[in-house]
Length: 164
Image 1 (cartoon, rainbow, N blue to C red):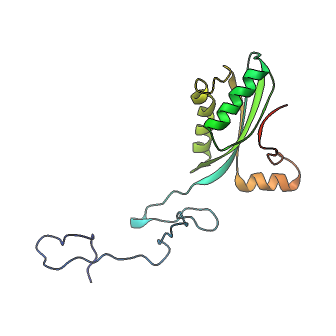
Image 2: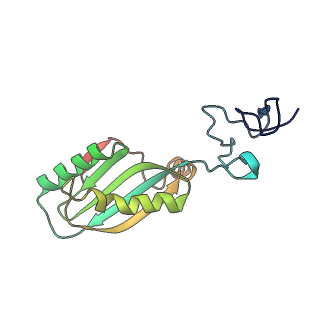
Image 3: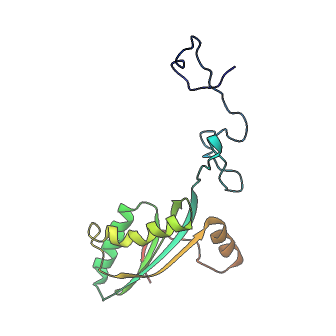
C-alpha cells in the first residue's frame, strides 16, 4: 500500500493512491479539539503542534474622569450585550471592573484581547473615555483553586452590571 493524497492518482500511475487514517494519538474526535486530558496540545500531522484553546478568567479595571452613573451603567450593559461572554461588571462614577471568561491559546493572547476590549467597544457601547488601570489574567485551574481556598475573586454572581 502506498500513502498519498486522496483524489486523482499521481502522474504516471494507473492506480489510485490510498489515504492513511490515523488511529493513534494524532486522531482528533470532533469534540476532542486536539487536547490531552491535561490540557496540553497534541502533535498534529507531520510532527507539527496543534494549538489548543484554554479558558482564562479576565478582570479588567478601568478608571478616569467622573461620568454620570446612568450613562456608565447603560454603557456597561451595552458592552455586555456586544460581548456575550461578559460575566459581571461593577461600576462607580469614576471606575469600573469587568470580569469575564476568554478562550485563547495562551496567556499572551488572552491578555492582548482583554487590553483591546475597552478601546474597541468604546464608540459602539459609548463607554466613558477611561483608561485601563489593571488587568488580571488567570487560567481556569488557578481561578477555581483560588475560589476553593477562599481567596481571589468570588464567583461571579449575580451575573450582570452592578454598582460597587
